[in-house]
Image 1 (cartoon, rainbow, N blue to C red):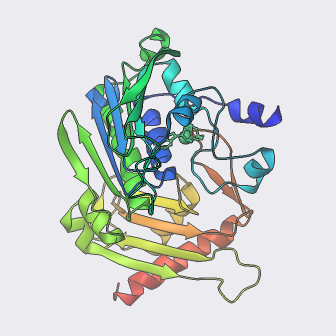
Image 2: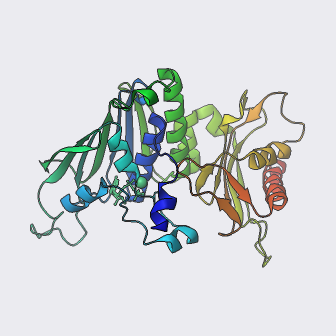
Image 3: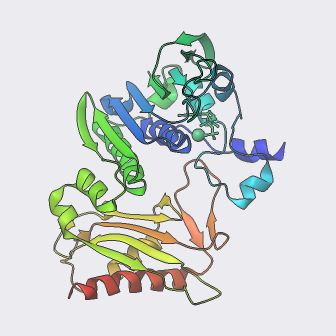
Length: 344
Ligand code: ADP
Ligand code: MG
């Protein structure tokens, strides 16, 4: 039907970073408090995402790897209304399983109150393991595992050599993975998110809820300490609000890097690479930045649902605002005010 066709448009898996993105989104949707991501050789050899989320019983796990199955929407109306969960296309696990060797180990989380009852605690004492190779389910069985879910993806594109050829160097693929995990870590400071590459920890956030502590874990002390708080509600008194809130952290004009990649912007909680928002932040600094230097920013912009067009495309990070100049002004003003408050 129409939902399925819209959903099917676009490829999910382009490179290891797209696998990581889909798996981390699933873990967040599963209400995880801790998510650990481990990749080998930039993710080209292996990706493992472990969470302590709600987990799946055996039936749900088997359903999860079928084509176009999602537990998250009912139909096109949900799609158009904009769903609250991150994943909603029901194709990620299926698609990843088609181009790799995929193992899922999962066990449902015990519900509070189920404690004394062996019958209902997590459904059964053990979890489920499912293995898929190149789209074929090769094993399903009981497995001892902790509550939550581990998804392991090995040998990505082993059966699609044409796609494998498009992978870049290990370093480049790891950069993409790092960027993805960093953005989820910054957007979800209440979740402890860690990243490991070839057995070495790259960063680990604490999940205590503070954005500054997430920034510290990801970017280090010097950056975290230079960060200035932004919090403005530009249109709180206006019935036709363009921007409801702009909040987050931006760096002191002397704490900069030579690329724009540390200007992270999130619209209604979702990471976007939007030129308008980046320019809006840079404008706020006026002439205070040295030439070809860019500040750090982790900025959350909330706009009313329905005033921003986010394409339903698996890889879409681009958006269009109904009132682009209104948003731009609101963001510049919010950051400018924060800098002025610091005497800058
Ligand atoms: P979608 O996220 O779009 O629903 P996916 O293919 O990514 O589609 O996942 C299919 C289904 O598998 C999800 O709807 C969810 O019910 C289940 N699932 C996937 N990953 C997890 C996880 N980490 N924890 C719990 N359930 C999961
Ligand atoms: Mg998903």
